[in-house]
Length: 241
Image (cartoon, rainbow, N blue to C red):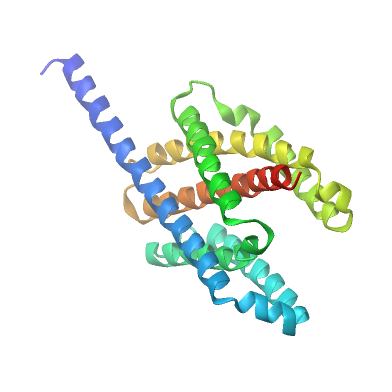
């Protein structure tokens, strides 16, 4: 076999391996989204939130804050122990996070009608996968803009917290549009980071490679969720108007 043919074979095998790796990452992300959707609708259909809101609104607020605290705890623990924990533990934490997120998302069915949620989800899917494809095939190194994106994310979080106390800020559509643009960029960047992890772990082999694939799916899941929430707020405000 000539050197050219050998190099071409290696390249083809490498690209096939990368494709399988990416498919695996997106499959895990998709399962997590299904878990979130099922948890959210299941809790809403049980009307437990509605009954609790009428009988014990204070307890409901406490449970909501507890769920957020659990989410933060999972993120911190998963990030800090990613390379040492077992793959089953990492997977369990990821899907556990998806369940807790679904429980908090059950309140969306009280704020928006089903058609608005469905349209927002489909629109989010189109935008998300378009950005992921850009990140997969672009020749531009998006890590050059990581500082800007991380700075924008911190600013968005701080303004969102401020919006909890100042309704005019919290209900601003401008904040939603900025968030959409920001997470479009982060999605493309995360796609490039996942490809980088594949090469750094020699094709995602071993426990570390498997755990990093789960974490990559987790990052894409968070990107999708954040995009969805901001797109939902845009569509929801338009329908009210």
